[in-house]
Image 1 (cartoon, rainbow, N blue to C red):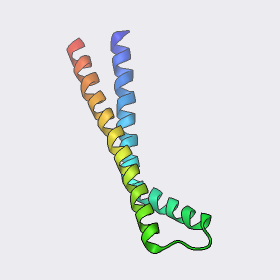
Image 2 (image 1 turned 60 degrees about the vertical axis):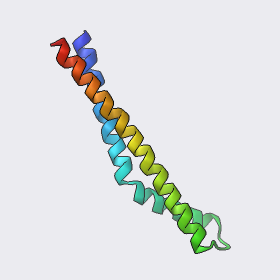
Image 3 (image 1 turned 180 degrees about the horizontal axis):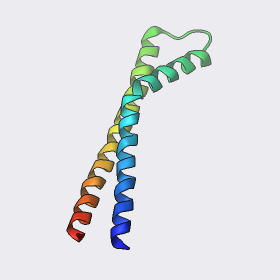
Image 4 (image 1 turned 180 degrees about the vertical axis):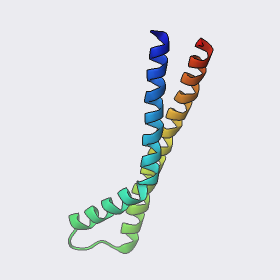
Length: 88
């Protein structure tokens, strides 16, 4: 029972780790998409400086979120792997 729980939690941590990497690598596309949505929202026009700052902030936020998620998943993988190995 304990080995099965450790194995399942290891799988969950690997999935969380992969989701974090997907968010990191797709942060540019997400930022670009949200920039276009921002342009659609303000049809009167937006200064290019303001648009660039908005786009960079969104991209950075998603990149940081992906890094945090993948770091937590990585630590979880290490802890679950160690506990699983020690239980053998």
